[in-house]
Length: 430
Image 1 (cartoon, one colour):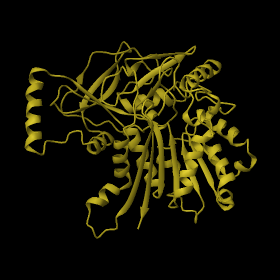
Image 2 (cartoon, helix red, strand yellow; image 1 turned 90 degrees about the vertical axis):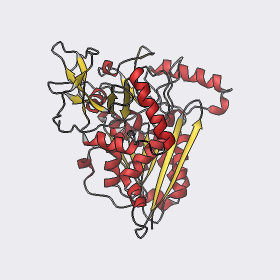
Image 3 (tube, helix red, strand yellow; image 1 turned 180 degrees about the vertical axis):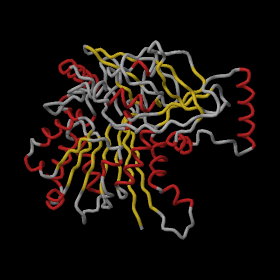
Image 4 (cartoon, one colour; image 1 turned 135 degrees about the vertical axis):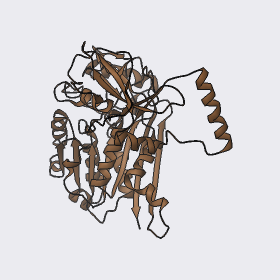
């Protein structure tokens, strides 16, 4: 996804959600502790330790002190479409963008907002080319921001699709923020005929109970700048060969927050590690030799390892494939983030903005409800997680007598320097 800041290149996004806390399991070996880290003034970490994903979810979405909950207008809204044909090149566009941020003093504009209506029209056209029009068109959007994407897609369907498509379509927005849910209704209400075909459900899309019964009809799911704000877990290893440990957070008597390392027991973390193949052992003579070299190297030059796991994404896709087994997914997000100061593979950018000036943090624990926490999306890893959650990966390893699921995947990188990617997953059943 594309980030925009004045004088830098970075955040333009939106998302939401969370993961539900899991029961704490006891460990046989005593846990390891790292030196106390940053002071945290809120009550995110209570008397009992919590996983990092629960900390991130609370820091972003808690109704009392969460980053998104504390902001009535976190996503910028443009009254007018940008006239790109009147801009004389990239520099003119960047100057206009800088001016827009100064005028609005908001954290970001999403791509669908900056490039409206064309960004959403492109998505609508892709849907029209591949959708089964013999059944009513149903679209779910997760984290719909200000409602611009929904309105522009419905505009396109009203003007370009066969009348039966628009007349029978349903567009459902699943939005965790009550303020943004209200804004979406206002945006859609600008076109009276859209209102009867649109509804917003203010809830967490990762909570299975909110979906009710399984919807077995074909549908589309759109997630624009959602994956980057999904909670992640953190795992740690003392060196290159020691086993990974899951990271918990606990409050000290002086109210400092420290990391607590435990043997990996959490089911969601375990599954994510298996999908990523993070502990895959050597399988060839060459890889065995490399592994031995690494083992020897770690004895003389030990280096701690940290990795961030997209457990929130795993949980969300689990729920979506359960609730909407015939869905096709469109997702757009960051594939790379600049200026990341936090350590670890797939580490997040933690940033706040005050008086139009962005500030990046070097510790994720500095997020006190006043900072955004967002992660890069590895789209190849996203594909593996999606295949795992849909059951497609398991079907490919079973007997050939079983019916195979045909899959078509499209990944498009729009701009090399921006790292905005769009992924489409279509599933067809024989």
